Image: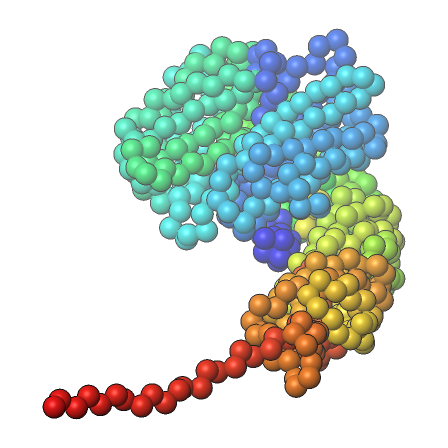
Length: 558
């Protein structure tokens, strides 16, 4: 699975994301918050969770971003956010939980799965003794090209009193209104909508009442299940396709930007999360206008402009992102919301060859354009990231899966989780063949079953089995060059006959056997021809009786 995820993860992060959900990363507010808002209490600590694609295909990854604020301001850089999921693994460590520190109030990771299924992702932050959580649902879809998808919701905003006629537009929908279920969730509250019609491209429904939504805009997670009357229903989750509110906000606001960095060359697909957006509008990175791809009440999708060129001075800079409504002139901004960075480039690595039978040493990757968080693979195996700077990454190699006694070699690969930018570098080699054991001699060279035999050779520390002929032996590895093994019984050899003049029970050397040692962890095996011979007690053959001639008695009758 690791190799599948590594191969597709970078593509999944930067490929054209389909559907309203794909263009609209959205928060699922933590349970327990009244009015559909994250609970703040007196401490003011809030965490919101967003995704680049809530319905990624199986065998790929989706970007996750947690935005952490206290009383509206970003928490200090380096604040830890713990992500966990009941399905899939996180790209950086290939586990179902990971801790990522914040930069500018944001912590970013990526969730991957090689199989279809539903992942309930939870993010938790603890700051100054206070804790806040947020959740979001990711549904990895079957890879089949005939699967349904969602493009956009129309409208994207409605009254909390319900009754809004909503069209979910997409394609390859199946079933009918009766077999389709749509639920709206926010703040731990879930309510079901009334589905009135379904075609191959549109689901029409009437929104439920959501009186908990008392702020100008409360994004809700919309979950669509098609074919509820079939054996294999299909579920799509849309975390930011629709919002409830007591009135459309006239003043736009920006909550989050995903991703929050991109290369100086521009054309990074960026989703701006907030409220009060309506066409026509303009988006600026610093003072440079971006190309707007789509607009809804809660989100805008743009392509970042290049950082260099005439009149553009954003090179390697952290810039403000600004949204301006053309009809009213009202603006919303997020200070330092986007960072321009140089492309990832790997120039060299150290400790690029390491034996698999010894503790791994840290590997330093030299280059430029590195920005945490990153995912690193060495020869296709995920590595544990220890530290990241603009020019150096230090990682600890992960254990490879070795099925034969051959080296595992492949490129060094760094993925910028924020942008999907990929850099490749020199090959890293897991040295396997050097772990091959060898047998030079055995002592004693003969004896009965049960004899303790000292086997001499090398690379024995990883040996997992010892065989005499085709029989496994009980053994102890004493050192890299020595093994003590007990010669196993050989019941396939018949006791030898005692030579003339030799008494029964005298040990006789009967057969030499090979000794084979194997490291099952690497698949490496070594065998020595016949360094040990078995002795068995001889037996005196029983003499074969000689038949005695009998003269028949003849009786004569007078």
